[in-house]
Picture 1 (cartoon, rainbow, N blue to C red):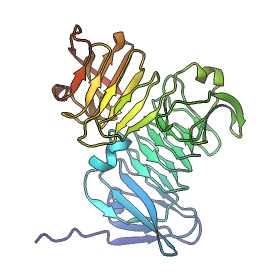
Picture 2 (cartoon, rainbow, N blue to C red; picture 1 turned 120 degrees about the vertical axis):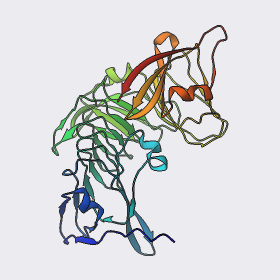
Picture 3 (cartoon, rainbow, N blue to C red; picture 1 turned 30 degrees about the vertical axis):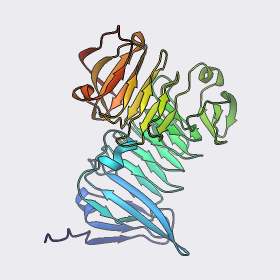
Picture 4 (cartoon, one colour; picture 1 turned 90 degrees about the vertical axis):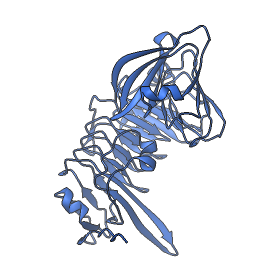
Length: 355
């Protein structure tokens, strides 16, 4: 019988006040249980050069709220936030070694960090995926920010008052909230709207951060883009974050740039991309099961998405595309595609780096 893997042997305990724990090394992180206790506490991982995956949560047991965490100290992030937890974190998983922190500052590498209600994440350097309900700061790099109904989101850096854009493509998955530094033409906004068409348009409002364009969702929440106007935003087709949960269902892409997540595993789904359907991303496509429908024969080229080999399919005379995340050129022969019979499917040996 194999011997159990020993857990962390060192302990760090915070005070009843607001503590900041700076982790000095990856060895320390792997071998320490951190319990910040009461107060508004910060775990600072910025001294580490390689990325981690960290999940903080809590559960109610009777009258008590019990903290919980899962850490992959060698789990540098790549690919998509939507499929990362299920398929990708590497290395030893440590349970309940990081407890009672309200804020986390990421490493210099590519991190995937998730905090419970009220959490604050600063991803720092690297291409990070971060999710919390209070404040999300991507930091330098191309980041994926997944907010709640009223999250403050910054793709670049933030000093607590001013946001500074980082001039790299950041992706905002928004149910509601405020984005301080949305870079039009560089960043991507994916609106969670239950796959329903919007019944409202962007309007001009004044927020505590300054003038903004505001959109109301079907949830009754609002999305604010500070520094942009309603006239500009209404001239651009909205992009949506869509989860396809219906087995055997058909999902048709709209005119905006959408992020589509295939939530069903090894179940046939059909995705329809038409003329003027924008530049979409499709994550977790099931080869040998799903079907893609196009208005003309797509041209395929190799690409990457946050470090994961992917395939870009361009169609509609070059005006529209869909990026198949995690799908290689070799996988294409296992994917059913439908388009007019007169068209010829071309495969090019191009290589593109996206995000």
